[in-house]
Length: 293
Image: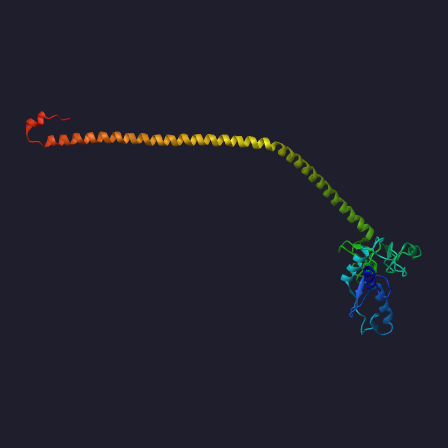
């Protein structure tokens, strides 16, 4: 029920089909671009324009504003419908929706397989894959189907652009030719990208193999490194103890030397005092009889 209600809201009041390339008027009502454009063409001869829905009048031909939000809603709705590949319905199947197989840019209609068989086959009736936005395939200036590609400006152009318009005298080629050239360029780029991706994949595989070997060797390497550093720590501890022991012994030896020197210094001081006393005596006999040591 919700889907049916939404579908009713998405139907153009002119063609009674789901909006195709929806546009809106200043009054806010929406229509298919083709539908309202034809209505306005018809009203142009009567000297005034009005909305087919609310009849609001416009002094000049209203500018059609594309309703991007509504178009996105339509596309999302159609993409969610079963048994529907393109999301575009045949313009002429008004009783019930039939998926379109082609769109005619000249007539601005979409056709199912049945109506395609009876459609005009003349060259100006350019057919394309089913589309909801036919205006994007037409020249914005001359409203003609885009048939050429301008190499000077890098843009698509219609016949009028080529003959009398802004692309006159430019280097032009058909869309098919330009498309094939671009595809060839893209294929070359694609080949380079594929080659680069293959090289990266080979590199990744090589690194993965290397990682596998590293992971396999990691336990043994870890054990060897742990043992090595354990031995180094033991050796460093032994060296530290030996050096500290040598430092302690060296200080002890110095202390012993200082003690011995202090004893000798005291003995020298005693002898100095004795000799000084002898030197100060006035009795010659006493000086001669006293030992000088």
